[in-house]
Length: 84
Image (tube, rainbow, N blue to C red; front, side, top):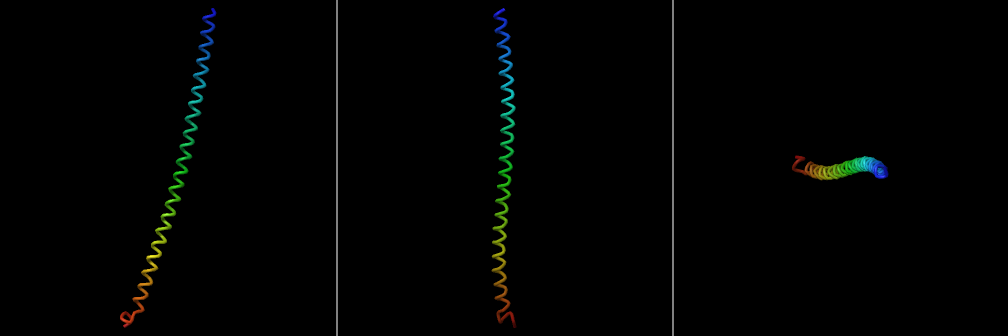
């Protein structure tokens, strides 16, 4: 009888340990899934931000080149050879 009682207690302890392990496993998986989603969101926002900066830089480069071309064309248009 005593051996059987210890066996039931051991079995119950094993079930409790297994249940706790399953719960911890589910919670751990959920935590890492949420963390992964947050990392993806942060990385996506960083990529968007960098793309906006690069687009603005390209815009400024293009605007400067167009301004230089406008000045050169105006200089050419004002020259006496073109005027005649």
